[in-house]
Image (cartoon, rainbow, N blue to C red; front, side):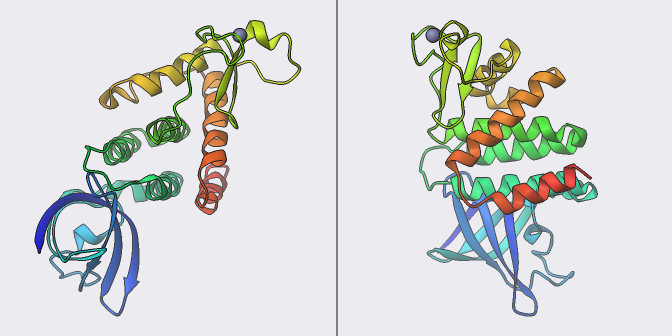
Length: 246
Ligand SMILES: [Zn+2]
């Protein structure tokens, strides 16, 4: 059976002398596995579409779970991400997070658009990689069923100032926080950013700015939020952090 699918390569592995095995993130089928025969040869017609982070309209053959690429039209290569090792290592971490979060669904999935939008943003503003990482992590978690209620877990008031517990996903307002010893108070700006990331149109996801202090808070809590909920991305995360600290 032949069919067409739009997807981005999030993992590539050599297969034999000339071929590749690819993991491809798609809109409706989650992550699928694709064999690109002969794709390691420069002269191969699928050479460009079989590169890491190549986004293409692919013609595939087979009934799954492994499909064979018979043709592909490249839409965007994201090749320039490779010029910056920090951005490249971040993109690899985000790809791994996407792979473990992807589900097969007939519904229009947001994950592919979220990943593409983040790569486009990183292409434009590679220096804003810390911001891109925090925004991606939080929107991914919110879209994966881990959306917190923006109310205080003790008094139920709408949260504007207070603290956030990344392990439970609960807010505590600053009034209730006075009766507790633990919990670091967040800036109002940080909580506003969390609400923005939760509810904005995906097209506008990166269309806001943050002070350095708020970004530091946001960045620490999104990473912690992910680490409590997703296994298996630590190696890529540590590699990105090592690259970013050089
Ligand atoms: Zn409260």
